[in-house]
Image (cartoon, rainbow, N blue to C red):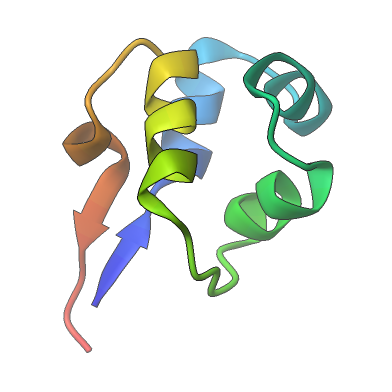
Length: 67
């Protein structure tokens, strides 16, 4: 299974969920779900917005974990 490891990236950059949502243009609901580790069916464009916000590659925020 592949997950978005937003929690680790968020703390490295020291942003709140609301700040990430406001600056990236994503909804606070989506950011909150990602921070809680809930399953979210994301579009590639959403992953690109998150990566652009953190100035990283999409692969930097994705993590493969065993099922």
